[in-house]
Image: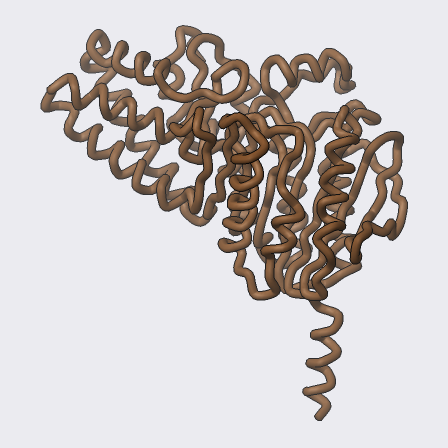
Length: 393
């Protein structure tokens, strides 16, 4: 009898899912935040699923919100620190303590500009110059307009590490409801802290994710991989109606990241070997494959990785050289791994070559801030970029 009572009590206080949405709306996203919150409220509550939000719209304070039937209620108002990563940690700990659950997801909601980092001036952010650099050169994520902060991937990794320690396990889902989040370098940095990842290769449209549909389709027994698919499916259905065919979103199973990196290193190693043997033949093949690959948003330095590998394979096959058989086989193996890594992928009809994961591959100028990321330090991709760019690293 005691065991039954304890179980019933626990079932009442512990939900199946906690979805914590870190909503940074202070830089020109107030209307988008209002739409997403209204959509979430319209979906109605599910006692097994908690949606908790931290909304920062202006000033030094954020609001902790909780989804109830036909409304979002404010639980408390909190003062922010100057460090975005610490604010994310504090919010997640609050949300997990306020509503306990079996499975946890965190969604980072704001602007995003990919793997590169904006510059600092004497350790103080000059906001207008920094925002201009972010928008022009695709750098950083999560713009805190009040504190003049833009978070980089190292700070993101630090926040997720702390959250993982707090939970004593990986997050079940990490979602990035922002632009250019689905990059090899970003997911490599955070792969040990989450099971599944959802993000966009391209610039997201301002409506962001379809939270009404997500909340409607998410059930108490939904597994992390299936939750990721729900997010992607909701996005697909929304933008097939509300966009002009230029949108992307994908879900990734992060346990495959090291296998992908290992085979990609083998491809890079073989290309470097071939380049040293026959540069005159190899160089135009690689450069044309790069130039023909699908790029994203304004500057095209972030390209679709699978599309790039497919273009290289095509170039090598059409050269009819026996010494290219090994590199063709290595490319096939890497593409196969990537297709396991990408659980599900959606791309608009105008960019159907998007396969779910991007990588940094500048054709002209190399940005040295790239050297800060773990993928640059631990893979052979840097050595490959050294061949691809006239600016030597």
